[in-house]
Length: 380
Length: 168
Image 1 (cartoon, helix red, strand yellow):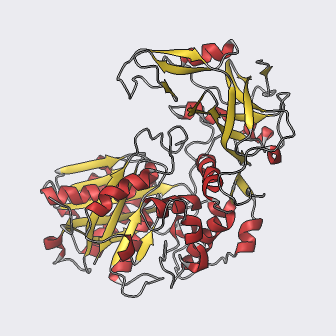
Image 2 (image 1 turned 90 degrees about the vertical axis):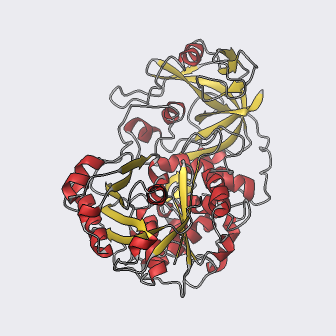
Image 3 (image 1 turned 180 degrees about the vertical axis):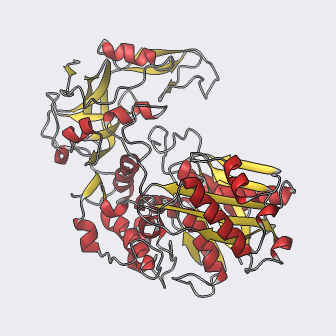
């Protein structure tokens, strides 16, 4: 049985985003979840499923009790941080499709703006970090920068191509009042002149650090007919973990550029009635600009090694051939581990985006490349 | 040639020490002797790195750390800038590379790049494709591989693609 269009994202909700938002991660999660339930017009007592990321400050038990959920018949967590977002929706859709649950909430809550960086100051090294971190590959930006330079060497990708991603996403943010960088312009001169963080990656190649929470409600298409908003169908879903993969430090197997995105892409498009050419708008995980390039290639929006040139001539901008991260993404709206990409996909298909693609019918959403990942095709 | 370097001069700001666990212990006892080794499957002879409990090719759980020549080629590198952990901030900007072993290029290891004498390298001197050879540096009680740029004026291999190298 295919997942196709059985489940619907019926409601979305979020807190404010900021460098420091008051409230614990648990409280922010509850606020986002109840906002999503209100958006759908579904009472919390109907919630019988929860989908979340591992690496959470609170667990399902606390959240379920606080929002007043009913008895739960399905609950699951997905690992690998930024790779998990789409999978929370996909797993919820599978629970709906098999009848394990009828009303699933998925959420992400973070205080990365006011809280610390999880890896800072830690001498706890787990495999494979013990083989990389002592040598000074300390932060996720260093880990991705290593693959970025190799991509530049193998395919001729240039800093300007990464800059095109940052500038396009900043451009979309400028239409979004909720975007933290919406008030700040960015052009190529500024991009190229900005300070290096992990050469070849500079300041503007890095996403924001944000406090906030975002949630979504997933129900069956039949149930969605009685909800308040137009349905957004979960048309296809896939996960991807390449053979021999070593998460962010994916340096040790033959071809790191056949990455998690490429693996997820095979089953994603096999389960869909559409292909990359039918996608009207894309929300591509952007903790770092090179991840967008890797995903463009992996999911078949362009050929292997061709993502740099693909970004040229405004392709990712409003009006371009593939507008990307239209609420400002992780780079310029907020960094909530990619969950705002999912909700922006929903808005595009409802017609309520602040950077609306006219008549958008199919939206692609991806979670983090370079880690075990997931992706969705949403449609209206 | 395995000169031991001790770049950590401040006890309060120490370079990270790798965890010596049952899986990796053989590697670190070898580096303490100035020897680079690779986990080698005793069932089929395949190398694997990072080490793991079972050989994915033949499913043997028997392995040994076998010595390999310390010659390698830079596969990629980064130059981290602060904010960094204190001991690394002191070294920054330093070069951390992925190095493919010449004896078996499917084996790649991560280590800092140093100059031929074992000291800090000017980041502008490093290119993908540069030949390097292993040295060992003290991180607390553990000897960590670092990679010395070959002392030559010859240019490194051309990039796989025609475009010029990234400029800073």
